[in-house]
Length: 175
Image 1 (cartoon, rainbow, N blue to C red):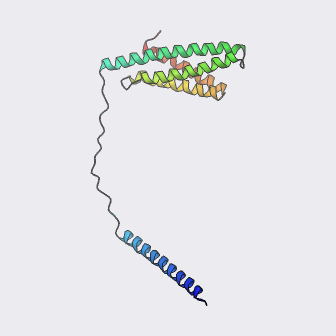
Image 2 (image 1 turned 45 degrees about the vertical axis):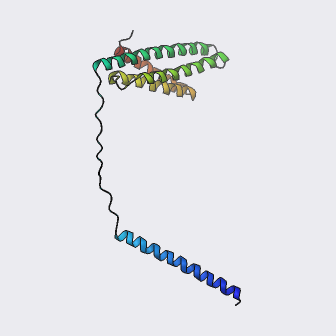
């Protein structure tokens, strides 16, 4: 055995001894941690939820009026865009005019939903907000179906939205 081989042998033994010492230290530390678990800290913060805001009857009436007039504008804009799109599509599905009308209908629908969302506040009575949110959901679902070219689904969503119109006009006192 040469001198070089002895050094390698000693270096290997030293490295193995160090690894064994680290392993023994890890076992001892783990054993101590298991034997003396750390107690969790005491719960010292009590979270108290604030009561829901209350609105005066004039606040709720103003919110209802704003939401209803916003819906009326949004519904009229989407109806006009849908009518234009339907007229253009009757002539040809693939003409540039029909494609532009369909794109305008989609843009108008999304703008109407976005606008209506900004007009609904927490003060809007639930009896008014619920059908308006349902109408917005059906508009989004219909536009998604149009984008995916699921025509039957788009028709179903359109009918669902139309069914909500009676409830909304009754709630808002429109027409």
